[in-house]
Image (tube, rainbow, N blue to C red):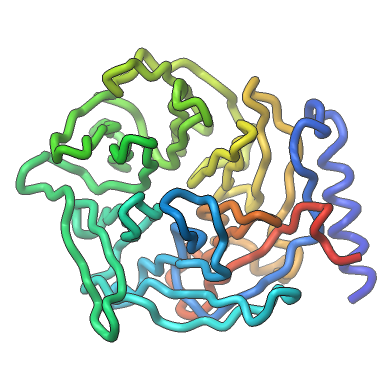
Length: 325
């Protein structure tokens, strides 16, 4: 076990070399699985108070898109000084096939649902599950929304990829008023999405093209033409992302089974492999899908693309100043 831990730390240290100025971002500590027993997990969101992600309350919501009743899990931290989490069902949204999630300024959890072709919001009201549809294919022609991000006005952007090669995807802006505007038509496989802290730049991960593009955000919330931000070497497949208050972009790489930190200038600062515990003969099909920022680290979802049940997990990557020695 000690040798395995040393190997993980050595891999992280090696990944820090030659990838830009790592001092610009929080450095990673040793990853650990903190909750397991889920299915094809996606969209982790840190439970917060005060609207946007300002105060961590110790729970993480995890979307499980393989469960027949559409379970969203709650991973509850078992103490202030432990990384152990208890996994329990939180809300059932009715059907499987749900993906990225974000906490809205209204306290509801917003979930992109490619399986149900829309955007829903969910919360617990006592013992009752509350689920409402915010965007549906009845009013907007959708392929299957994948992920979303809010701005401070309460509007949100969401990606709508199409995986067949003969059909393009799109990026939309859903205004607080309810208006839905297609702001980027004809974009290949848009997946994860994030906003810079000043909300002047929108980042979009394009999974099939193995890159992130960025767009200048106009005053009305629409955007300029996408331009390349960073391209990844194979295997990559950028999936979900988060942008920190300091501008650092944390990007999940599905096929690389890793999470990377990127500077606002598009430099890779560090990379943490998240397949350290997998038997080498069984790594095919596992993928890192998404991440969420907590005050002391990252929560990252890892799943299995082969459809196996109960092998999805939540991984915690501590920032080095919060990591246990």
